[in-house]
Amino acid sequence: MSLARAAGSEAVGGARRRPELRRRILIAVAAVPLLFLLAWVLFFARGTSAGPAIAEPGEFLVTLLDAITVAGLFFVVASGFTLIFGLMRTVNMAHGSLFLVAGYLGITVQQTMVGKTRNIEPADVSMAAWFVPLLVGAMVAAVIGIIVQQVLLRWNEGQELRQALITLAVAVILADQMLAWFGGLATRMIWPGAVTHFFEIAGQRYATSRLFMLGVALVVGVSLWLWLGRTRMGMIIRAGVDDRDMVRALGINIVAVFAITFFVGAFLAGVGGVMGASFAGVAPGADGQWLLNSLVVVIVGGLGSLKGAVAGSLLFGLVVSFSPAYLPAAFTFYSIILTFVLLAVVLAVRPYGLFGRPA
Image (cartoon, helix red, strand yellow):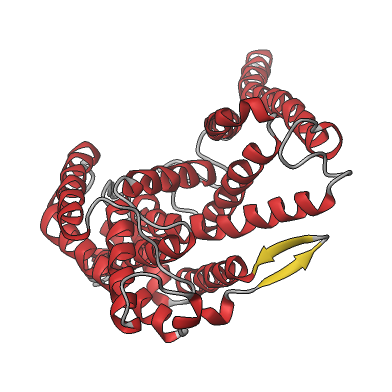
């Protein structure tokens, strides 16, 4: 009997060790190309726009700063998606549309405040003429988001396919309306003159507006961390995600709590939209691109994890910035493929993302 018991426990232990062994093998296999890429960037990147980091430290530092600052923008947009999709498990395929609505509205409000519709210079834009459009665009996006959640999504919680189809229809409607109201040409918002300067780093010029964008992202990240981790509302949200029936039994209005969460998530999409309009401009089709960006960040980082959103944004920012700079000149158009390589590598090693867990 003892022999059978020992054999059984050994078999169970072996079964538990096998997935761990497979995971270690996958990590080792993934580490090889990563080490090769690191060596390529540092020493061997000939025939690229940036050159090897050892020979061109200025280009390397600028590319690194580009990666970190654009990661801040990815984080702001994806953090709203993390709240809605990751924490609430609500599929909102109109998240990119909220981004684009806020971007267009921010541009319109800024033009009204400045008194010009074209040839606006940074010197014409005060800090108020940037932050007021930011708040207006984000608030309108949040109001649209909460209407969609209360009218179209509240009654089908847990039905992911139905929610995806409904919000895709909303995204198509919003895209058509934005095309009718704002036209089909690309347009952009102007950074305030107070942050539109350049400084020198290792012989290269760098725009302070990108550091300003990173600063806004840091404020958003710290505020979210404090709200979710240090307030009663944050604890209720996290508890409601794990067991909403128990939260209801305690007398807490979980419907109102989730409505507030959706409002905040849509507001963050709007904040990202105004930042994105200032950073790279907006145009029809940007909604789909930024929805895809948010999906990549959330999948890489893990559903419902703020730390995962930070990690996913940084990794995605590194891939987006370093690929065109350090791929050989004849192959830079393949840089988009490395985004999906990042997804494949992370999901092979961590199926739920870097900081995710089973739903």
